[in-house]
Length: 559
Image 1 (cartoon, rainbow, N blue to C red):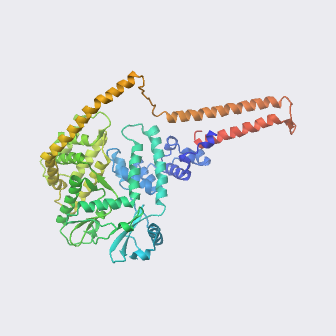
Image 2 (image 1 turned 90 degrees about the horizontal axis):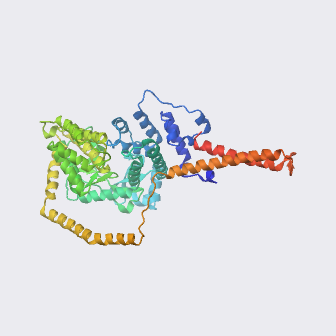
Image 3 (image 1 turned 30 degrees about the horizontal axis):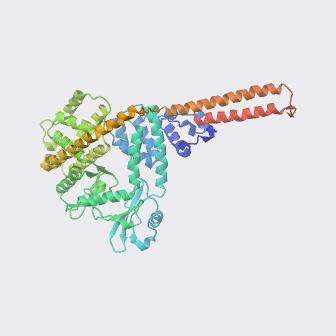
């Protein structure tokens, strides 16, 4: 029967849906329950007495942050992703979402040992001489402990939290479902696509759950900086690593976040330059960069080398995008507004007709603030923030890796200026950008591109006549078919099916009541309690179907 068969994915996690509904009500978002189909997950008594506990003291953005914090790690990480999307989300929400923290209490050391033994199928004492009980760091997905191998090598063990995968899988399923509903019923905007954001979040968090991906990222950085004496990247011990466990080399050093508070004696100016040069190499040479280079992920060794750790988030840039970014850097340096606008649009995805004149005017006003200023006086973080705000204003949806790059670049500039007040990230980028653009006009590069284009043209000229001939033959044989597919009608058809079925049941119930009432007046046939048994049976059947119909309506939340 259709009503009882409708236990789809929305009912697999009913308690979690109920929690989301309660948290939304608690923080003043109760008006969304109807649009998100969440009424059905509340108890009947709660539905009949629905108090929207909206606080007049908090803004909607603040209340959204509280909702994400209360819903736990997966939703906090979703909020952190949204906080980087200044091209999609209004600024007041960005400001609040950047406050989301991923700090959670560590799980017990006994569970750490249990996880290590389960992943490696060996007793801990057979593999490690010692594992420190106190973690170096703890986050929502895992935590980090210092350890010593049997050969005396100091290492770092990154252990995933027990059952975190199941928790995240459940939340991802719910996020996808809610994103689809938001897209169809609430947003209604081609610019902001909740399903696409959910897909991007799914891709990112799935990578964070697989420590082997982080290990391969670390290894790639190690290869890219193998010839750089001033940069250090930890070695991965693959024989001791799995998807839920990562063992890497321990690098002795002080986190950049503590270097000044601990009054470490070193050349701050030199460290700022090393860090900036290494980042520009990642972006404009390797096309593979650390996506989260905050001061906690950068160490300064006693030899004044810069060490990068935690490669769970990385960005990738193809050759063409690298050249566009290099052009953009030079356009900012040279205050070339036309080129800045062109490069911004080339890097983005236009979702509506752009008013280029207005965009150039706003960009010009931004650069006018730095008219006549020295290069070191240009605040790249402010420029990037303003450019992202303009992207939002003019509906330019930028690639995720470009957003990640902008965030990383602002972090690098902040670190650099904290170490050296005269530091300028554009000055560090300039030689790398010129070097990359010089390669664009190298004779070998030009010849290779001409040969590649000529090869594609040859294939087009050779195969196009054959393809046209095949189409004409299909038309001649009247075997040419065009398939049309309606988009977005599936939900409407499903709703019509439900309405039709309920009407059918209502008609059947009415017919049973009318028929049974008629039989009750005839006094014919077998009796039960001195009443016609057939009439009583009809009433019972009508009561059963009527009750089932009422329950299905109550469960749908539409009453």
